[in-house]
Length: 495
Image (cartoon, rainbow, N blue to C red; front, top):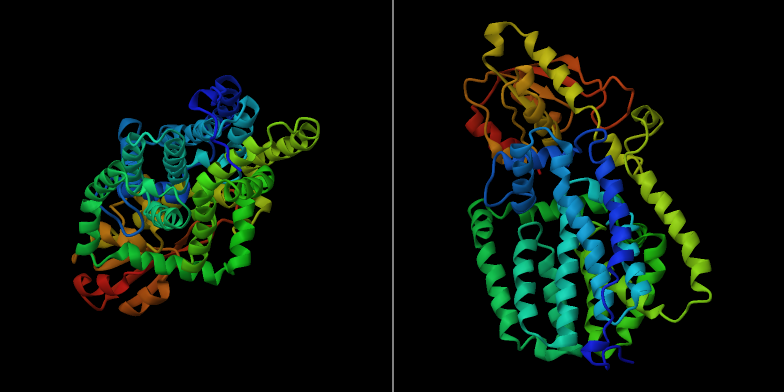
């Protein structure tokens, strides 16, 4: 079986209009909801990380913090500005998925189905209203795979150089693309086309990716490779939440969506039956296996889904009689699920949800940050003046510290600190800080023994009755530190 036996001129034109309608509807939905609720906890961290811009971080490369810094500099406090880059990436992913289907000779309908699968994926579509590494990275994978697919059809080696350039960008977002290339390289050795690995342009692109990654690798080496340590922490978290192979596949399937699951499986079957592209099918399977074995998060392999959807959509060409009867109900249900997952409900409607509810998790954790800053400011201002000037504010979690860094200055709060994750690297409390306002319970058991007295002086209340992870968090006043910060702070570091 082959799908590239016809000359290049037989490849259908990009179905711009229907694909643009799909992309446009998604863009409108994302843009309309981009200012709803508030910052998600990770977004606040990216803003904080951007204001401590560096070549590397404990938990990600520097591109997303740089985007957050740019948005917060050009439009301070604007949620919409912060989220525009990821909206563009998500909409771009819709178009590039259609372009993969086009390269495979897909009709306008096939291109639209492929584009719709990306837009209606519960992971790739609606998550585009939040700035995160997990929403930028899959788009870059999609572009890289499109370039590889186009190379298979045209053998234009310049495409592999561009794949290297996009890989260089992807490595500034996450390191996951390394796994794709390693696994794909083995698959190509096994099944071909082996001339891909003989291309000088491929290796020139690899050199560009390696060279541009050197600064962050040097940062990691200078700091003891904390990102590798962070990978171990993530694997432990995944195992603790029941993230075995079955659980991984179930959640990954949930991310693929109602349309994406059968279309992706059909596309996988077609790649494995197509000699020229068999390496992509093997790569897709192996990537999932690798991330399961490594204890990765369930969204890590998301970048391989668009090419499988494109193959599946092209394979549906010619099946016109029964397809609409199956497709339209699935499309309508998927569209409804996408809308439900976006922050469209009144805030009060979240009162009945709990912090462990995965459907409402992102929305719930985007609420209450200004109120947290209000409560901490009230506790801080209630301290005697002579105590205040020797008090440091410490967030138990990096989210809490990031929120206080963002909202605290307008409330008269000093710069916060946290020993949690990447925030630990942003600074050590001054030795003059003999007392601490500690926000939250996270790692308090490690913090408490180093102070003579620990007294609760406040409590976080979002004033909406929404039971997210910060609701009801205590605010402690800790006095009588037993060691210098230069000794204590390294000991308190916790990923």
